[in-house]
Length: 161
Image (cartoon, rainbow, N blue to C red; front, top):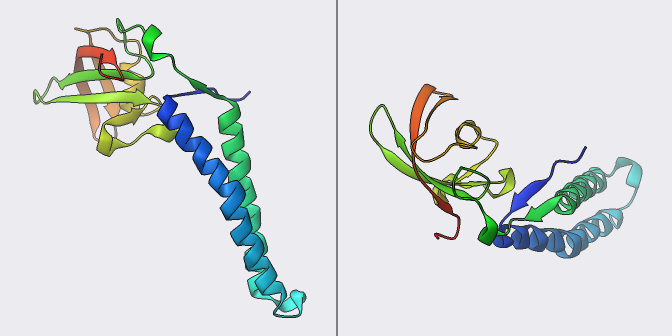
């Protein structure tokens, strides 16, 4: 069963552009490498040719994986999002109950996660622990450093509304 992933319009466009780049420029570059290696003579003892063919196989696998992701990708209609509880594309402000530190995360798909921009995966320990929680609720989440307790302070839509 294929896993459906939810994306922002921006995230899906980024995937679409990456796939297009791999199918055009990427394939052209690999074909050039294969042709160059083929021109060097005997293919049975040509390590460059073997390496180029291996690279081609890997490239085609990546394309197939991206096509599969794209076929199961859905864009979330942010205007109809329920902000009463944490879900995919929720912007969540949480407070660490132990040290009082507050942080804001946006829950996104695995492929869109980027901690530097505050986007965490719904599949991460914190993402999983926050899903379905409401403002005022606390949750204990097992992270690599041990157990942490967070309080949900605010839930809003990804676009800041």
